[in-house]
Image (cartoon, rainbow, N blue to C red; front, side):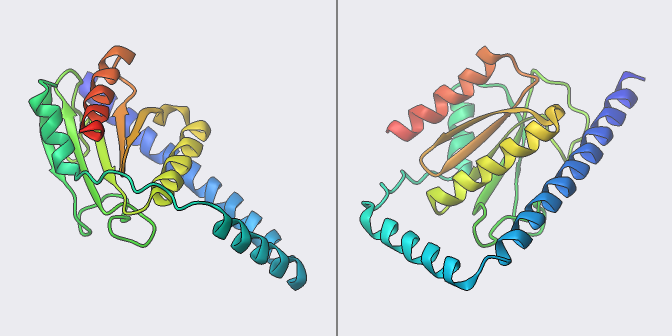
Length: 190
């Protein structure tokens, strides 16, 4: 019975998340519609300013490149209770973002053995996403933060290092989550 309740909760979370994403998309489309009504001269001026600012800024530091599998292997080697691991590709990525322009280039999810597992295809534990560019990682993190503000049931711990964004289940204690963060930061410093 408890498993049925957790499955129901999982379905409610997914449905609520979908509603949140739809609302967020509607808000973003509304902003885009307002921006497209801007006079051409203002758009040209803004584009010129952006080009000047970009040329004035020093090039961003290239982050250390880590692979998603390397991160999970390091978590295992550090003794974290990693259960089932799912390595995603463009066909099985539940978000259908893997490899798309401006999105993550690798994604791996895992079970944390300390957490109850409800859905074998959606492990409770964590996810690592790898990005080709720092701005893609920043955009993804910003998007996820907006979603979790709109739907707090989707809260998660988020850590980044180099080209990696790690998300860990909010069902873990802060101390347990810090164990994941410490391994990720250690990898980035090597």
